[in-house]
Image (cartoon, rainbow, N blue to C red; front, side, top):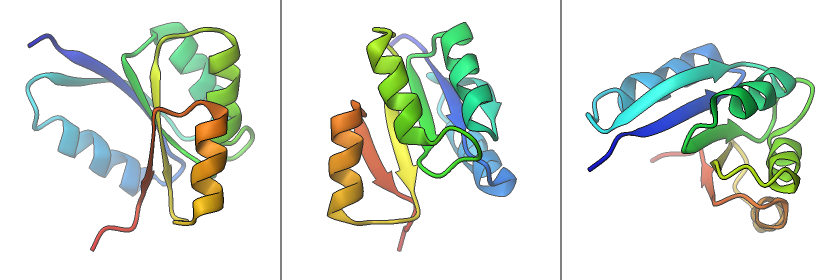
Length: 109
């Protein structure tokens, strides 16, 4: 199987590093960039064109849904997985409308 490239955009350093460390355990997943800010994350995704971007919904500056919508209008083929601390149907619908490939709650039990 070919390697998948990822960019992680989350403003919580410990959580972001946890995602990077966890994904690094898989030989076919390679994190090629990470950011803590919305606009910087958008530029990173544009510049690096990863296969997947894992993006927090609530970010300083531009939020995850805005990033997803912006990339969708540019026809960039990166798949966006939106992460959130909030688990409600309205957020899920907004993520789908914005064009996210997946929506995942940070709440793991």
